[in-house]
Image (cartoon, rainbow, N blue to C red; front, side, top):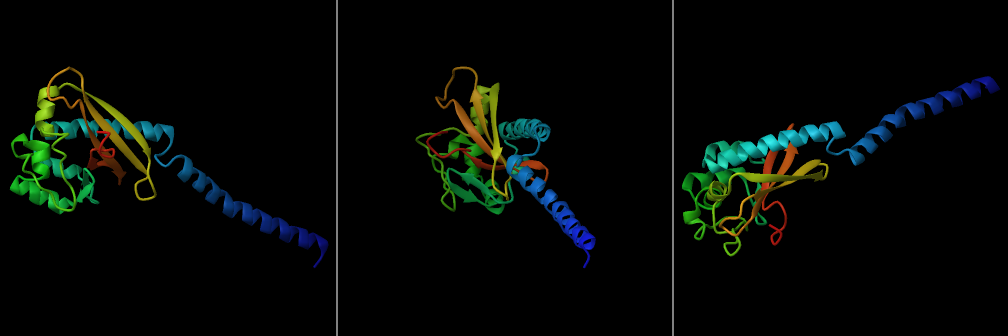
Length: 197
């Protein structure tokens, strides 16, 4: 092989290596640094999340359990650490127990029981979210978006805070969301570990 042919072959191999590795390096950097997307995409997601939260709060306040179900993450919902599947949530809504009480009916919270380790800490929370919203509206919504893992690349914790001083003493409640398939889905309440909410 002539020296010129050898140099051309080396150039071709180096060129091919650069061509093949550049997209991988760029894609890897994007996945690590921008799991929720670019800054513009993150801002768009936050606007979408605020709209989702506002609609969910309206649904909770109006006690519309069937409308609530369209926001439930397919992986289930964590209630104080235990996980309820969408089918368990539907069953509890149908029988007006467990999570139904927690969201919509203060009268049955004290006797509410849940499957799969989910529960309500009645020492900490004794009022349904619907009644809390009725007593404390208007409210302030605070959002914290951050990166998850490869299955939930964008997650958010949302705090709903009362503005005015009133009863009950609980000043805030939290909702957690996952961003999946172009929309925000409810994944848990409290959004943070118990003791913070």
